Amino acid sequence: SLLPARAPPVAGESLLSVVRRTAHAMGYDSPKRIVALLREAGKVPRWLNAIEDTEMAHRLAEMLGLTTSELTQLTIHRYSGSLIATPTTQSPPAHCDRLSCQQYFVSYPRVCPSCLSESAIPTDRILWSFRPVPICIHHGVPLVSLCPGCSPRHTDACLLNADRGNWRVLEQDLADRLAEKSVMMMMKRIATR
Image (cartoon, rainbow, N blue to C red; front, side, top):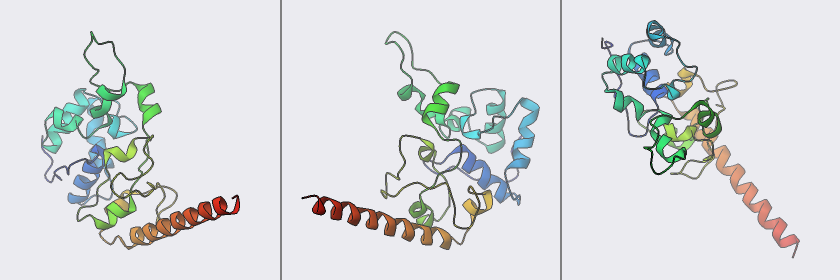
């Protein structure tokens, strides 16, 4: 059955982010209560962004008012056809296997401080969990997993925080460090000539 409040997905958003925002809309501090409702359908994966097309995925899709296909687009499985090699005689796989999940994706939130500070709706993107891409493709800044206000990893409250001043501070700090690194590399090149 549908949850009383639901957060509609934003383009590129991760499933965990949608569940986090839905929990927030319902007045919860974290998505744990929503995840607890899934336990009746089986063992909940440690990382929701890797949920497979199972009874649990169908149940979560129904709770969020989504189709199972829409829910899958919010997970890492949207990339399975591109990441997993298959013979040309076979259809691409619908889901990433466990090894591919571990090889290609991080299971903790990484965020772009620039995207978060600019966004009217703070969300984390599924692409940010793609291990080979350590920078934001829109801003060119490194993705971060540590928040200036949290320890050691981002918390649900930090990612939902309407006052994103911490992200602006971190964004400026990263820009300063990248600029310093670029200047240092240029100085080293000049010194070796």
